[in-house]
Image (cartoon, rainbow, N blue to C red):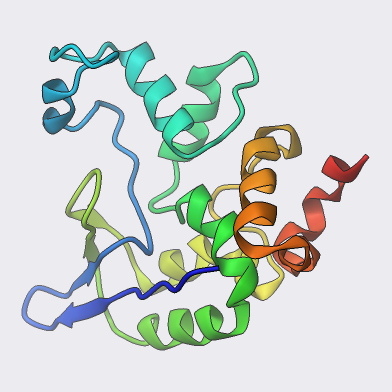
Length: 178
């Protein structure tokens, strides 16, 4: 496993939380910059269906035959933790991440500016904590179906070793072992 560092800053004047990757807001429409990449490497606007597929595939979520339903579940909450980080990073640093999340949630922010996807977006300390519920043995603002995690389970085991799958973050998804 490699290392990971997250940064968060609180701008008092605007009550904004500035983040790199900790929490994202998934926009309904693709960010304009993606038009320069297109769908299969040919520059051009993405259709709604192409955007749904690209976002889900980028996060290594297995498709279940309903990209739209899966995408909308990710786009609905005020903020989510990237599935890649949730299932490949946080299992190996759960206690440290939980302490960091709790310290950030003490700031009185009202919106967040993230390095990726939709920004700025409305986010409160309570919603920030909700996105990270999995670190504290609770449900999170977005919960996957176990069948969506096949690729992430494999990636977690390859990157972090089999002990990563023993983390409580994976506890609700043990059906993947059968």
